[in-house]
Image (cartoon, rainbow, N blue to C red; front, side, top):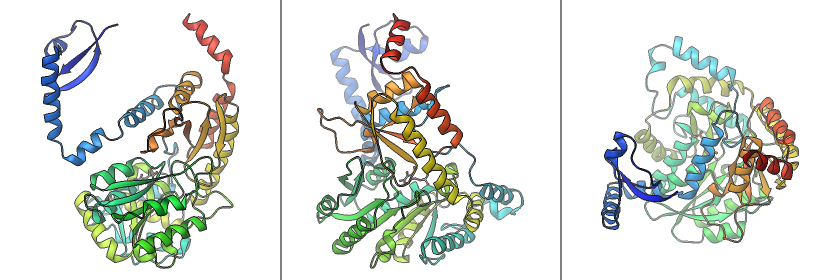
Length: 459
Ligand SMILES: Cc1ncc(COP(=O)(O)O)c(C=O)c1O
């Protein structure tokens, strides 16, 4: 097969692509595709560059940022959606979520009156802010004033973005811990801020405090993000780690963003330590939680930021300009579920059991070296004997299972001679799905047998 660089203009936007060299077969192809001489290639490249210039710089960073990682992520998601594939890549539950939340949301729509189907107040339904305050006090002993210290956002994603946009100027620096929840980085870029990365090391993914202190030593650093329990590693920050981070925040006068969306997913024997609870930290910490995660309704987009009024007021103003308010009847559903603590304990037990079952099954798969211990969260990380993408490809081909290559969760590039060999599996699923996954992992002809069977098929 020969290849040619082609320009497509069907959408009105010049695009460059490598394509197999075949004559145009349709009218669209004939009009929109041309094989380019070097001169016209140059012309087109300039035109694409000009077109890029129409994007804001921040949007350009998003468009080019991620690069290979973004492509890999798209591939994994597309793979997981294929018929017959067991999707262990993406982290959302395969069950319906809190019955109390769903029942009250439906009632709010049907019988809540006109107000329930219109905008809520920008900081959220007061009944939800009161329910959040009650939940924080019951669960963590943390007291927040519902009218000034809590803002309801459209997902924790919005709470993160609003935190960055409210407090970071272009060029300000923010300490992030990698591997990380990938959409956090995009929001940092949208704020024009510069990430300073601190890297966790397998297998325990403990927080390297000396590195953190070093990253925070830059005078441009204004903020630090701590996500515990952690996506993707499942590490739950210890009391010592949280204390040390608090020390750094106080010494350097930093704002802390505590991403605690998995606060309910802490396995037995481990405790969730809140940064905001430490001396001198409440006044500098935005604590983020997610109703979607708490009650396994991730599509609802109802979450919260809580902290001192001094931080929450500007954050709330940004929220008003981003989404104005979260969906009103769904806020009513989350308020009811919070009041009832519906199903929270069960989820942590279910996911801890899933972790154990999946660990055992994965250890029987050739190429899996070890399972990294986790103390909570939605995920399991396995260390393999090869490049992460190669392992994912093997798993998809031989076991019809999708998992996520961990390189998509890092900014710092891996050395060519020591590529990322970690892969992530989701555990936030029903026991039925986990058992199906374990069966698929155990029941497959494996290793040499599978490879030679495949070779015979393709010969
Ligand atoms: C660590 C972390 N923070 C924030 C979010 C965003 O949560 P939400 O779905 O409420 O926007 C996620 C989602 O996966 C996450 O993993």
